[in-house]
Image (cartoon, rainbow, N blue to C red; front, side, top):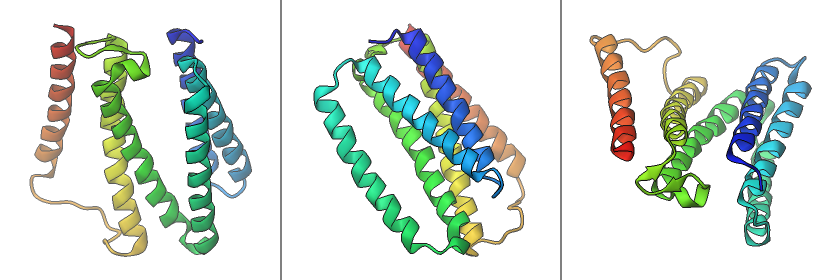
Amino acid sequence: MLSANLSAIFYLISGVLFILALRGLSSPETSRQGNFFGILGMIIAITVTFLSIGNFSTGFVVVLIFLLIGGLIGAFIAYKIPMTAMPELVAGFHSLVGLAAVFVAIAAFLNPEAFNLGSPGNIKLGSLIEMSIGAAVGAITFSGSIIAFLKLQGIMSGSPITFKGQHPLNALILISIIVINLSTLLYTIF
């Protein structure tokens, strides 16, 4: 069983590897290296998750089943999609990653015992901050990837989307994210 600090360090390393994977996948010359970084990051993340839980028996089998199902779906889609449509596929899948981050943050907040983060109403401050940032970044990633997909498909115009009042709306959204995250933190702390 790993300590929370050691788990956080490994998750940070995993996150850095995912960022390096995205960077490497941006060019055909570095795509193999980027793919390797992504695989290594995922292996670290899955291993740390299981070591943090400490119970391999039932969870491990369930995860293996879902990895197999997801791998088969991904292989089928990759086989059917032509190489020219790969940017759209990546944008579409990337939107699902953002959505998954939001759902994980919600699940961790609603059931912190399952993630070893404390109990409802008594979640560790660092975990609350991490959940807040994860949910916000995941939501932005989801919406941005959907827009990228639509632009790559030609459904939306490739030109920047601008409208009157855009900057005040963006400021309002940012303030809303900060207020919601702070109120959640304060509610849980006090």
